[in-house]
Length: 74
Image (tube, rainbow, N blue to C red):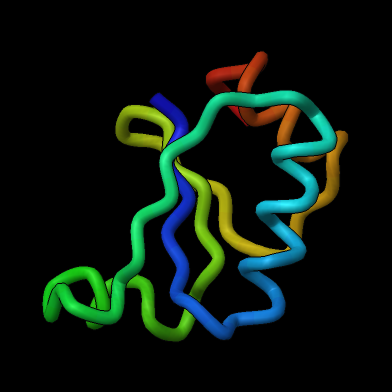
C-alpha cells in the first residue's frame, strides 16, 4: 500500500494528494501530527511517499512517482 505522510494544513501535502489523485493511484493518508515518532521522523520532510521500506521525499512530480512505483532501484 502506498502511504503519504503529511499533516492537515500543509499546502505541499495537498499538492502531493492532488498528484496522486490525478494519477488515479490508491494511497493511504497518514497524518503525522498525533504521532511523536512520525512527527520526529517526517516533520521536516513532509510530504513523503512510502511503499514498503522505500520512501520518496518532496519535491516530486508525476514522473517521479511513476518511476518510484515501477523501479525498485529509483
